[in-house]
Amino acid sequence: MLKKLIINNYAIIDHLDLEPDANLNTVTGETGAGKSIILGALSLILGERADTSVLINKNEKSIIEAWFDVADNASFAAIMAEEELDNDDLCIIRREISTTGKSRAFVNDTPVTLSVLNKLTLLLVDLQQQFGHLAMEDDNFQIDVVDAIAQTAELKKDYQSLYNKYKKISAALSALMEQQAQWQKEADYKQYLLNELSEASFKENEIEQAELQLKQMTHAERILGVLQQGQQMLAEGEQPLVNEIKRLLQQVQGIADVFDMAKPLQDRIASAWAELKDIADEFEVLSGKVNLDASLMQQLHERIDIGYKLLKKHSLQTTQELLELQQQLQDDLKASLDLDEQIDSLASDKNSLYHDLINKAKILSAKRGAVVPDFEHKIQELLILVGMPNARIKIVQNYLAEPAATGMDEIAFMLDANKSGQFLVLHKAASGGEMSRIMLCIKALTAKAMELPTLIFDEVDTGISGEAARQVGILLRELAEYHQVICITHQPQVAAKGTRHFYVYKNEEKDGRITTKVKTLTKDERVQAIARMIGGERPSEAALLNARELVGV
Picture 1 (cartoon, helix red, strand yellow):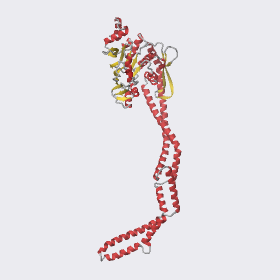
Picture 2 (cartoon, one colour):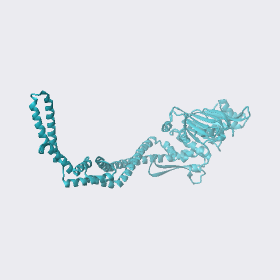
Picture 3 (cartoon, one colour):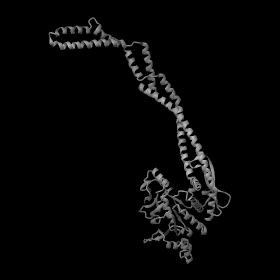
Picture 4 (cartoon, helix red, strand yellow):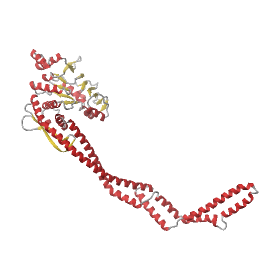
């Protein structure tokens, strides 16, 4: 709900405060007084582009500010959260036009783009001007109207919940199938690579160990010669060093009993003898391990060649990396098989959801279709009351081949404005004034059921008078029982129905400038204003009596 509108330095408005109430607010004033200027300023709040020509004082920026009560507006709160904007029960939207022509928009003092501003204010204000056909060009709005009459809110909510699940699972299934198609292109090649690695059947560190073993076998004769020579010198020569050391040890033992100072030498020689004997034994053992098998060397050469080719092919360095690649290929191919199972499972879930969705959609379609004839009849009755006796409304319900977000229906409001027998799409067939009255009738019929923002009607009563104007006023008053309504009017019958009456007038300032002012009228002032609408600038007593009767005082 709009709590306050503040306009500074806009066109011929120096400063203006407007505080509408929660019901029907009527705005009257002479032609050219500035009512359309106020709507122009409000349009900036709704996201329209700015123009520096609206600046009165070229040395000061223009500021338009609107305060909205959004305490119970869940849809608005959701968009605020989506845009990461601070949200409270009161939302202040501000537009500023600098002297250089630069325009900025703010929501709760946070700068926003015009697209974000427009998205937010669509949930706050519905500005129905002449030739403002946007609502009836919106297929969702037309469906929402029929749903409001059919009272399908819960059914539609259940359907949309199913639809969202269906779309989500469809997207997941499509993604998996796309992934599967991609994997299938690679599967044969991956299988070939896996077969190649599996056939090679390398063990951990095998290539590195084979390289080391082959290197040893290549130098086997030299290694064996050194080992055998060492063993010969220590244990098997004409005078083996081990035996000589043992003989020396025995001789030192012979003097140690009588020469104590020789005992440390005895221990050291004993240790040296034991170490050399162990080395001699080790030479013998290692000599037995030196392999001169030519066939084994050939096998090692072959294994190393296979390993080198695979390492080079995959740009790898070690046997371990080859084994990890082999495991990854196995995992990928297994995942491909698992993907088939996931696809089958999701396809089954999708089919089940689709069946439930179709059933819900059929019920929803039937409920919509059931209310259309009566709804057409009621609109027809209201159109006669608001001065359109020759107009005929037809609501066409077409069925879609596949489920959509709002069901399996297309709803189109058609109009035959003059009993011609030819029905055209409403927003193309109706004139500006006709569209305003048709929208008023539709909103009046759906007021209780539909969530609507602040409704602003700009001269909805253009081209009518008398009883038709009175009926427009009644419809506006009924609509205002459920939604805040602001109506700019030239008809006394409409102006008198307002719960708050604003009078727009021109005022000559001390410096001779003409500015637009707005005044909230008291009951007596309303009688005078409405009497002037009936009888001119100097209303007669009859006009005053008529005005009092209309106002109810």
